[in-house]
Every structure is written in C-alpha cells, then in structure tokens.
Image 1 (cartoon, rainbow, N blue to C red):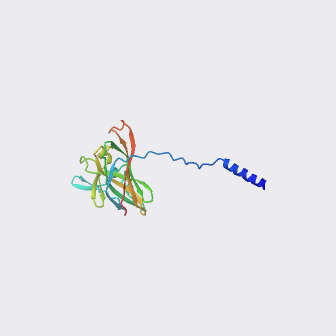
Image 2 (spheres, one colour; image 1 turned 90 degrees about the vertical axis):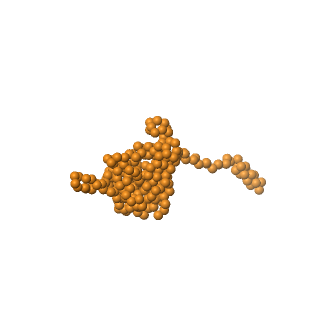
Image 3 (cartoon, one colour; image 1 turned 30 degrees about the vertical axis):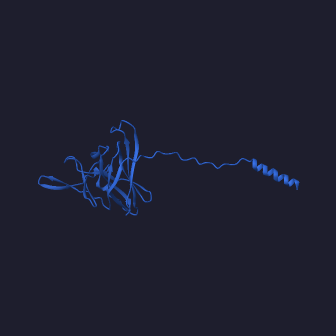
Length: 218
C-alpha cells in the first residue's frame, strides 16, 4: 500500500514538472500593398448583344457613294470587326462607364484597362475600348457603335482622346466590350491604372491604382 502511494506521488510530481506545450501562433501572411482607389467611376449604361454592330462609313467616289468597312481598330488593339464578335456560347456586353479624376494627381491608364468579374469570381479582360466623343478633325479616326438605349454612339481611340493621361478634373465616357459565357452574370467592373505626381511619366514616383463599381443584377 505504501509503495503504491509513493508511486502515485512520484507520477504526479513528474507531470507537474513536465513543460507545458504552448500552441503555436500561426504566422500571418505577408501584407501585400493594395492598389489605391483614385478614380471616380459611374455606370452610364450596359447592354447585352449577340452581335457587336459598327456602322459602315460612307465614302464619295466621284458621283457615287459607297460603304466602307467600319474602322474597328479604334478599339484598343483590336484590328478587325470580327474579333469583337462573341464566339458560340458567349454574349457581348457593351458598357459605357464615366471615369473621372477628382483628385490632384495624374492617372495613367494601363493598356486595355477594363476588367469584369462575374458572380462566380471569374475575371474577364476587355475585348476592346474607346472614348465616346467627336473626332477632332474630319480626317480623325472614329467609329460608330450601336449601344442599346443610346443608339449609334460615336467613339474615338482612347489614346487620341486622353493622350494616355487623365489629368485632375478631367472625365471621359469610356466604352468597353466584354465577352462573357451566356450563363454567367457580371457583378463588378474594374479600371486599372498608375498614379503619378506629375504628367511626366519620367518624373516622380508612381503607384498602382484600381477603381471598381458594382454592376446591377439582371
């Protein structure tokens, strides 16, 4: 009996002296710097279509007036009208988004700055984009695109309109085209750019910028 009691006391002492194992604190993931939200966006209109329609131009040759192919190359890097058309199982979404620089720095849009996200989190990059507006001269390149609710909208290359810079207090109605699977619904539009202190891209520091707006459900 005495031996058993002594054994129990020794075991209790050993347990008391054993080091307590503390649960490990998980190491937090490194913090990535988020792009700054610098531009003010608002949705003007958006419309679905199974065919992107561009208006042919009328050209006079002597006494005859003929139609020429639409100048689809004004949409970003797109070179032909056919690359703007959605493939089988896809729809085209034509959007007009007002983009305004209401702060005191300069916005430099990236090449093809428009992105769309659907309700399942899938990302889509624009198929083409341009600025709604009148050409500066009769010889300037422009295209007319059919936008539901707005009829035929005259657009010009974004570089021609902005000079690749959105200065403080400037705003533009940007026309974007996206291709999305027919069974998907868009949830968010994002515009990506760089932000600089001056209009000279070789002077000062630059930050990544991204601004977004939610899109209405169908």
